[in-house]
View 1: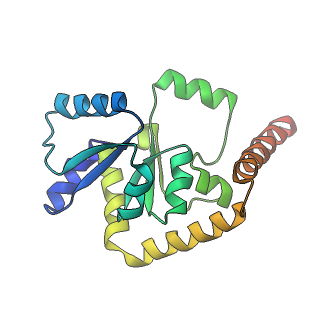
View 2 (view 1 turned 135 degrees about the vertical axis):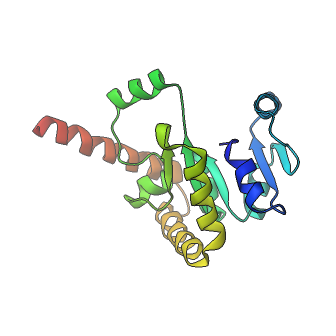
Length: 182
């Protein structure tokens, strides 16, 4: 994910990045990764504990999977989803669970609302292209935001966690039923 930032910045020198870190320890690891890649860190700020505020002021985002994807949808932040883990972890997870989408907005919509870049698809050039599309194409941004309204509306006022869990369980149930049929 961090590898995409210099390329985006190269294409627009005024672009600035704020990266949310859940803890000071994670922020330290992110800084080390930037240092190891000898990336120009000018314009890249790592913020701890400011995820909601960051999402509210950002124009577009690159978000890792998890609850942050629903948070981004709630704050109407157009984003692309990036998820990459060690290959053994990924393969083990694929053996246990087979789902069509990884991002919660996509799971709840039962289609790809947010572009997903998983494992080998999580290449900087592909991520940069998708983010640029969100930045440069108002129609794409507006459609995604409208989809977010629909998705968040499905969650209702309360019980969002239960409804999200129910959607995931239903998707897994469909996959299990299909495997039993085959």
